[in-house]
Length: 491
View 1 (cartoon, rainbow, N blue to C red):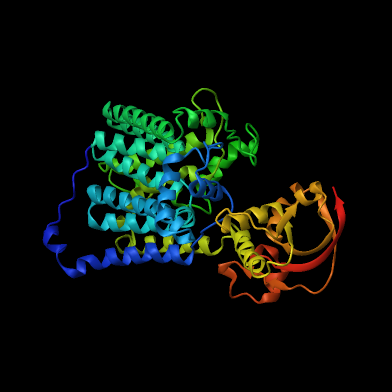
View 2: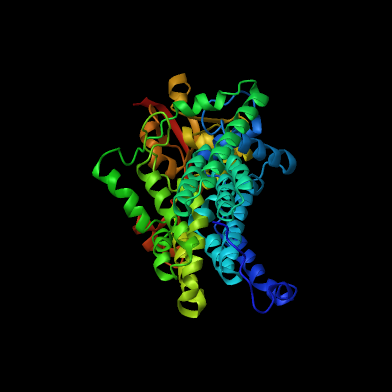
């Protein structure tokens, strides 16, 4: 289906020359940027550190699937070498992906419904919690999903060759998005009864293979390095074992409501029922959302065997474009030309963001500890393994001479003695059971530093007594730097 641009009776070419015509778009950009400044994520000490370490060092062939995303890691490396190792610099590729995602939603909605629909689609896409959270993290999903969103728009516009090229690039940045490329093409071909979308998907697959093989060959002389790594990755969901009742229910439950997308996915699939039947593009967007959601829920992540997806919401990332386009089609038919429903959605998304928990907050604790470690080079510091890794990541992946972690110090026999213990309460709560053997210590004085507990943004108004009494209100619990005497270790 080739979407024709909407025609404005008052002459949109003259309208765009008026300064007032650009004010909504300026407001939209401020909205997009403001959300990402206020809810800046930065380093979280998870997937991002695998990308960052490899981008900084690039010292050997990749050994895991994060390092194997060579195209994204090369872009991240270029940004770091050009502008330095800073959190905002490392977030630039993901922010670029977020802009691609929002502009794709704007472009698609404009071609199909005109300027009002374009603005609403951009506003909705800019406020999606999933994108706000991940667009300031140095991971591959945002940039790849932004490209995948443009693939979808070009597919709608009938520009098959351009769509194929963009789809191949999206998959090269993050291979999981080849599933979105293929599913969007299948849905479009089925609804439009055309073969070209399938041909575009086939070409996109070839472009992806050529890019991936070429990058690996140029980088390490082995074109199949990434494919061997991907073939060994275990994508099984640790939270929802396959074929259990919870495994079957989760895709439908998250479709109705999730903290990453709110109710937007469900509403987008209702959009065709709120618009005239002639608006086929709304149906196509809704069908793409439903089909891809079911595929991530019950399809196979590998082509050679059935292996269900790990139900990470970030796998639905490219759906932000069709979701926003479908909602932008439905909202103008509601109150105030769609402004009131869009505002309600925006408020819901901001509340979901403000209510977010401790994701990435352990790195903020490690950052404060690192400053103390640097300021006291004559003292020996002890912490858990994950906190040590976070501090080394913050230190540009350079070793820290006066920092040790358990269980290594227990296995090496150097645990006994006087230490400054950096207690990162979040890491101890989430990963403490894996830090064995563990040192046995007794306090040797008052804490040198206490980091106060921080409430979730939505509960910043709450009395401190409430926050301390109810742990679910906390975004970051208390952490301490404590002088201790270690007498030995225990399992």
